[in-house]
Amino acid sequence: MNSLTNDLIAIAPLLFLTFVSLIVLIFEAVMKQSSRITYWISIVGLIWTINLAFTSIMLRGTAFNSMIIIGGYSSYFTIIFCLAAIFTIVFSKNYFLNQVDNIGEYYTLVLFATIGMMMLASAADMILLFLGLELMSISLYVLAGFLRKNSLSNEASLKYFLLGAFATGFLLYGIALIYGATGSTNIQFILLKLPELISSRLFLIGSGLVLIGLAFKVGAVPFHMWVPDVYQGSPTPISGFMSTGAKAAAFAAFILIFIQIPNVEIKLVLAIVSAASMIAGNIIAISQSNIKRMLAYSSIAHAGYMLIGLASGNQIGRDGILFYLLSYMLMNIGAFGVVSLLEKNEEKNLNLDDYQGLSKTNPALAAILSVFMFSLAGIPPFAGFFGKYYIFIAAVNADLTWLAILGVLTSVVSVYFYLRLVVLMYFKDGVVVTPNIPAFNYVVLTIIMLAITGIGIYPSSVLSIINLIP
Image (cartoon, rainbow, N blue to C red; front, top):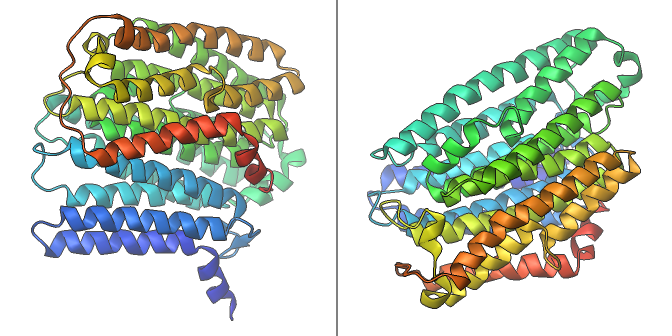
């Protein structure tokens, strides 16, 4: 086989999902009522992409003249993105019922956003990183405003687009400066020349601008102001997708570029951004009465926790972020999934008080949501606890003990607003009007809950895979 054939085989997950997305697009174009068939094509396509990622996870190296990373790192993130997309599509079907006449193009946009995320995690070159980021972002801009008749959805889309375009400008100018300092956009080449570049002012300014662009995408302080408004206004399943898949994709790029940079000033900036995100996210979340805004500020705080691993700059920190991203994807998309099922139409059941007495009207949903809240708070034996544990250990090993202590203290603060929801569901009287929820959604939520519990009890099941990633 020639080198082109080998390259095509190496990027099989990306190629296959691109093919599936085009098939879904064609069905949407030629069939009037295509949403049922495109729904199943999308889910089956994503499941098969996960299968291809598992089969290629042992591969190593790059393809297409060192433009794309294959196997290992890329495959692990592909699994996270595809799982997030599957859960988003499953929860969306019931959510959009009677709200949108035909949502066939919705599935296409989710698939395109997932392809952009995969490109971000596979990028061995900053040009591909930028292309992946834009494909993901443009798809999410449209998805945020998918409820065209809803003013909040339109506002969310516009805010996300304007601020996202502004952040993209920082990122692109930073890439241009790094190219000016190094003469290359290849990430591995740049990292190999770090000892020479670390004193270059042009390189450091470029790195700072790239950091700003990626910090916006993960919703870290002080680039977080768009998060609560966009999450509140967007369709709830898309809020979950943005807070998990898009955040994981941005962190994949963050790790590729910044985990090996030894510059003390950049590490200090990352540590300060991490601390500010944990403090602001957790404290402001306490005052929120809208559950989507509460989860939005919670998302900012969790970005801060993951940035601890990046600031640590060691192998434990990197592995901790990878473990945390999988755990966070499961528990946060599960939480947004429950909210989307209860919200149904007309933005009902979005205030925390609306969840009073949920344990009496729907005990199964209350129990599942409680597990997600316990895990987000970092209470053992759930996956969220071990995610934070590995991150804090990385900080201690990197002589950032103060950051680990701050992380523990802010985690204690977060227990208040997570458990407040549990208290409302179990110890307050109220009548929650729960819409009819398909049995399949309960099955998916139960699978997510069991996965969070299983990973928490046996973290080595995920760590053994992460340890294989170079």
